[in-house]
Image (cartoon, rainbow, N blue to C red; front, top):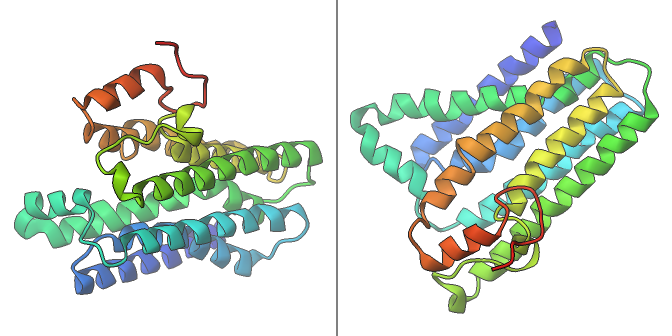
Length: 256
């Protein structure tokens, strides 16, 4: 438990550093770029303190692959652009309390979420058990499916948005033909995969279920789907796409 508390302290320090950088840049997109890196920080700290071997090395490595891709993608996407519309709105709404509310409601809250979502990996490192290979392999397969959906979905969307002819249009092809949010489905699936792996690696794996339950809830009902879909409300093309396409799970589209 001491290891987890120390790792949480390091994570808190990292999130505070991100906050200071965001103040200097006057841009809270720093939180988005640092999101994937934050997972690497807390997992690396735990790994250094406790060490790992065998299958535990794999479950520790997977978030590094995901976090590196995500951080680079967001950095590349945001480079040279103004602050994201969410943060810009909060900056205007919060007024004089923006700085203090940013610290707690963006950076400290995000740090807490990162710690809870990373639990399957942290528990596998700190409280290992004799591996159940079947569960580990099943979880790894689910993670790979999730990583494919997130990475491929992001690639398809970025390529679509890079084409000036698609300005104002709705992305409906590729994986987006089967789900309105393949990248969000992919992120959720990855953490479900890591939670399954945790059941094969840790004696306290039940606590790891906090991770996929939390991230799936946030994506579906808080900071993911609702915020993005609200921007397209009333758009005829969007409403038609919404009526025939699954919001989250990849499914065949409904027939018109």
